[in-house]
Image 1 (cartoon, helix red, strand yellow):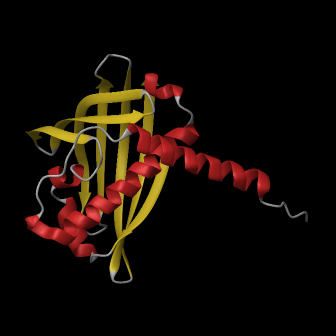
Image 2 (image 1 turned 120 degrees about the vertical axis):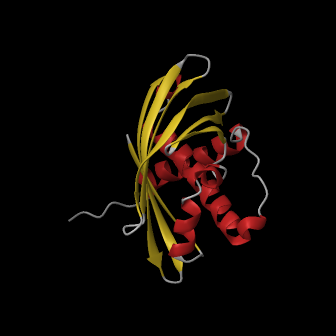
Length: 188
């Protein structure tokens, strides 16, 4: 499943690109993500934990930076992992592209996500909504970390909060339903 998100950071594109070169700092901005080991050669080992209501999914795996194009301001990451309780697997290709937007930077993120097992039972809408919530939090954390520069301390990892994510994702789903049923149709 392809999931696309965009957000803006009020920092120049060169500064955001420089930040994106430090993968541990970027990963620390994504709620529930923890890099556990730098394997060298643009490969990392880590964990991702997300809680959706009563369900907690915790994946362990690897991430490989397969492309860094400084001219196009594009980075591609291939990640794959297994749920720690053996209930499923996930793999994804994440492409982030940075473009100048006024005096700031627009970050486009495309995720090609494949899920199997327990995580696959959630519908596309719910997964997209949870991803949108995580991208919103990621963008806020990223903007804060870039703005603070080197003075920023470590970001708390842990799992992304289940109740907060579930409530925000449910609100997004309800808004989609209301738009679908309550926006008047215009006949041609």
